[in-house]
Length: 638
Image (tube, rainbow, N blue to C red):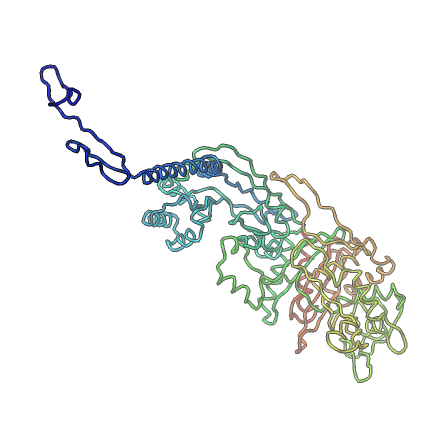
């Protein structure tokens, strides 16, 4: 008989007896209760210890889950919030317009040309290989670049980086618009307006202005404010005035979508443009010298190179400075190939070498005016002191010749400079048995007063010091004692003496103005973006009076006499008075000669001093003087 509580009724009209399912667990030590009723029941026995382990496992699981959640939300929450924010909000650098470079008349030499750049953000690019390949092919097809080139740039970047990388530069307007229209289907790809540097002054300015190129890893390590894909000045004015020309970058905070495309600008700090620079160089003078020097190089196969420098004696401004052969600095702006760069480096004519400031040569007779000044200042000679030039001087078995067979006869200082009489300067510098000379130590002292054996401090990288030999140097390096013949050679600009064309131009300018030595400089003024001068460069006086004026005047007269009756008579063609000095410097085992010429004008009130050097150009009259004459004619016939 079924008990009432073993059934329940469903409905009102019918009742069904449904047995209740009972579960009974008899907790016993190790056995099932034999007396337990089993019909209609499922009974299970669990050991107490096993249940405890299950319970403990559940507690541990939820404990780990709790603490992990707490770690992610509380301890690392800020980090992950920043990461998520970085995915949505990004900060882009806004490059500042680079300063424009002008000559002294306002003629543009280096400008910024509008340009479009294709960039990519590695973290926004498709992860799926097939989608990435399709994107690369589309970019390559639109820009005209090869698939291999685009792939190489993309693969070289850090896949997880949110920094923008340059993919293609110098994109023309049509291609930029086409790619921009497709940009919504190209995740991680963007097209932005930009500028690139163009040098419009011509190759004659390449050695002075220099060029831009991609920043290297070493440069980037020392310049934390630069970007990994920035360009930086690598030579010339572009390098020396990099911080002035570059300006200050701005910043833009933007919100991006899931494809990395800009949705909105949150904040923006405008960039500060770089300062414009107005050089003291005159483009017309620079081009005149370049044309004349290149004509010499084209018609004289022995000539390996040349340089010219012109300086304003009144303030040290450099009016012209060039080195030939030169190069096209625009090649570097568009990314010069390794093969082309190696070709330039290995060119025996050394087009990348700035001979004007870095080339070191024996001075030849252009040094003689300084030996004359030193002799006067030290009382070795007076303006009227004479010597007999009979063709040279013999010391023991050695003979030191004049350039003119038979000599120049009775010679005073004016004639010695005008006709470049070696014997006179041998005796002033080294003396003989009958008279004392300056000696090597005093010669060095006076040459250093005029800036030799040291950097002049011009605002260009790569300046050389030249070299003045000494007794100690010869004994240490050559293992030989100093002889009087070494002093003779030094006194006429031969032997181990080395000077740069810039140094010669600067000491002739110092003689021209009566003894004030300026630091030569190339920047005339700084201007803002509308051309207003914001800062004029003040001339820097290194030595107000190198030697007393009374010791310079006789030398000036000798340089003037060189034009009136001596080796520089061709300068009489000028519409103004001038003074000058030729120089012929031997070099090499086969006794080839460099051609030098230096001059200044007008003689009474000098406004330009110039030097021309032609490597292996023969005598000073042969190649250097005609080039200087062309430049001076241009200057005074403008």
